Length: 173
Image 1 (cartoon, rainbow, N blue to C red):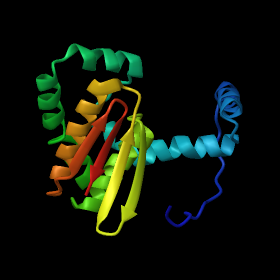
Image 2 (image 1 turned 180 degrees about the horizontal axis):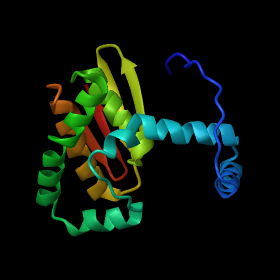
Image 3 (image 1 turned 180 degrees about the vertical axis):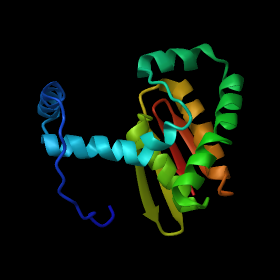
């Protein structure tokens, strides 16, 4: 993990019903309201404000999995590869100003963390970096996500060795 970021103290007015909903949600997650609000703000600043420019929709994972399963493997691969060429490139350039291995990996980490793709982990070993993306979308999810991420990595001229399982994608860079 990186260095802990400095925090600032600010006060905001929010409706009582919004505060009660935050308290309930924080209680269910066993975290403080402060932590929950910080997570929500981070989700917006790290991803939401960029996605807002493109117009997004939210969909529950089982519905998305149904769409994936309705597509042929060939169609999924074609769609995944074409998706990576526009929006991710624009977001990476808007956020960082440059496309590099680090900015592409940060984009992938951000989409995983705040975009609901699954879970991201990174392990650096001598001579290689191993990136693992886990999810609960099944084999078609692995196929789709792997081709999106391979195409995004391709923006930085990175062509990883990829391994797939039903619920994980592993890249060796």
